Image 1 (tube, rainbow, N blue to C red):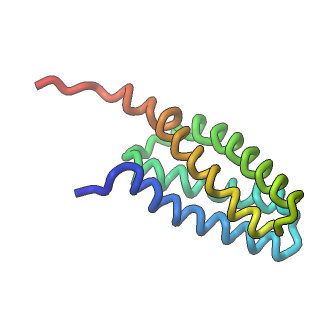
Image 2: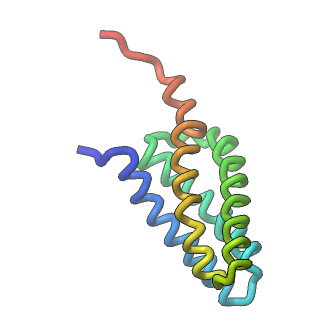
Length: 130
């Protein structure tokens, strides 16, 4: 039995987040500004996530959906950087700010991918009548 959709999303998300956040931390540690570090980590994470979410969560490997996935992640990146910026201005260090900003970004990511990116595939799937 396959785990529920949201569980698969979270499992793949944890793997992707670990990858992306690890890259973000390495770049910030190396002296890269947090916004640039976040952009690089997000782009790498987008490519990884698109493949993993499509295959293991939503059961779709249609590369054509990347045109929906990328704009969604641009908006999510802007949300994430905005949250990190606000948290840094409130006195948090970029590492903690980056970690805290993940919570609302992950929630938004799930909702938008489920209802906008991969939902179109479900609507195009022919209904089987028995």
